[in-house]
Image (tube, rainbow, N blue to C red):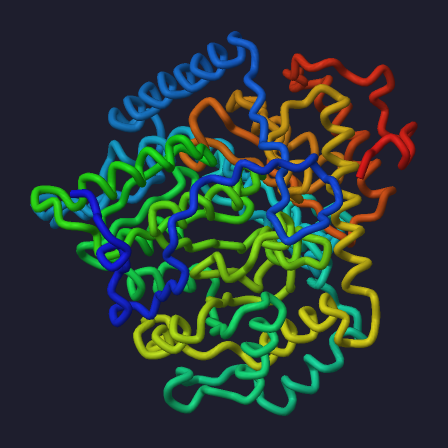
Length: 549
């Protein structure tokens, strides 16, 4: 059902506190600027879009063949377990409960039992030190093909950490930097043991909320003790039955869970594809709700600033233009982008030079760039005030730990320069330099990598299941700690290693990682890119001038 007037287009204000004063029609921006050029006005910055290079056809064929082989052998092993030729270590129903509804679905556990279990040693590795730019690992071995592990008592020292979200290096144990955190821990204790609405609302919580609002340039903000719950528990308070959520297909699980819990209708658009998004919005406005064709109470677009598995950056100016054109609301998850991108670390709104007021709901976490825990919701004061009384995470969850609150506060003050130093800006610039250097070198070597040049999340495509396992083990043997990800967390043909850059990584550390990447890439034949390579791919021979900022 088409909407005929601005009054009809305006969603109810009393349901969620979402409010939009500017409802005038606004199409896509047609004015373009040179990528990376200086901004002379207040308009949004136009940037090149992410590229996703496709591998040769034989890579996809070999990937499917690899999964087919391990699946076939999995059925053989299940047969051997059934006839008693192999010990069965999986969880099983008790004999007296055979007639009950099964708790363990045999077919659903097939992948974990026969594929994941064989390579489980590459995940959940126990760390026994500060997870900074380097860390120590407790060595473990398995005598039953990874069903159980035993520790050898040996520690693997000084493993370079390329997997933590420690973007600005605030996960640190510097006594001078953490003095205020220790003081707050002594003053308030370790935990609050109450919700914010009861006895858990401390003055330092309110100070942090004011600081977050000031940092983001919005009217108000609210903090929560858990980043995942910031999404999953607040989205149901904003939308419900009769509302429409338009979600990027690669959104994080917390966004997906929150959308499902809300009871709203969910429609998905292709990742960062503005044509797909506009098609969904146009159909939603024209057709309205199913069966009744009544207008949607609200239309909420949900996107992320940086997508944690792809390393891609949201096309924010274009999404804002579509949001205004179709009178929708915008929910922006900046878990990976806040602090990590933008000249002063203010996220993708600053990266694209857009007005923060154009984003109706700004969400972010303190678990990454700020070295703490928890998250925030920021925006108009009416929105935040509404969530204080209607959000499940605010009403029922325990308040943020005082020590964590102070850690986030001191990190944010450092970024803003309110501690009287330039350390925060130095770290932001160092992260940007490390990101561009590392990405440029990997491309020169011939690896296929995803994402934007500004993104500190660097996925390196490995594709084949056997190579994913071999890559993680070979890198650990060279004292490089990496995160590898495969199906079902990624599409079956796009298994990858995900590198996360940090401002605490030195150039020597990155060169060491790149040197071993070059070796392992040749050893395992991982250089699938068909782009023209640099004539001198050895990273140790490169100079800073080779990487353009």
